Image (cartoon, rainbow, N blue to C red; front, side, top):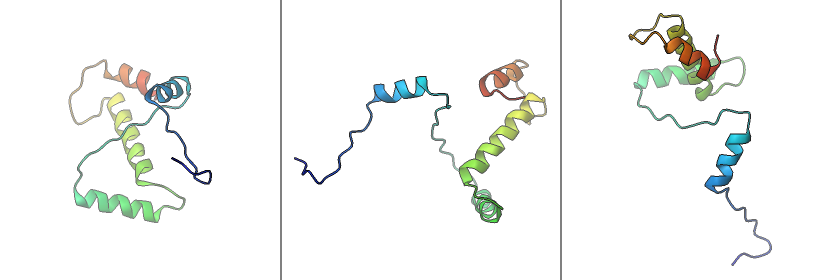
Length: 96
């Protein structure tokens, strides 16, 4: 039983979250868990620390993902892809 002084917030149900996502203009976020070499993580921390403005490692990773998507759109990716990947990436990510 809660006392009057306790603040209690009921978490959104899965249905409520789905409705918010469906009606929102923002792209929902999903976790990306990946093991990377220690040296990469260390370099990301140095980039973050030396930025002229506030930047997070997450923002640096998103920037690098945008760069790699654009690289594949331009046909300059390291790994072979189907020709229609360009249209798929443009449509899904609204790039170029």
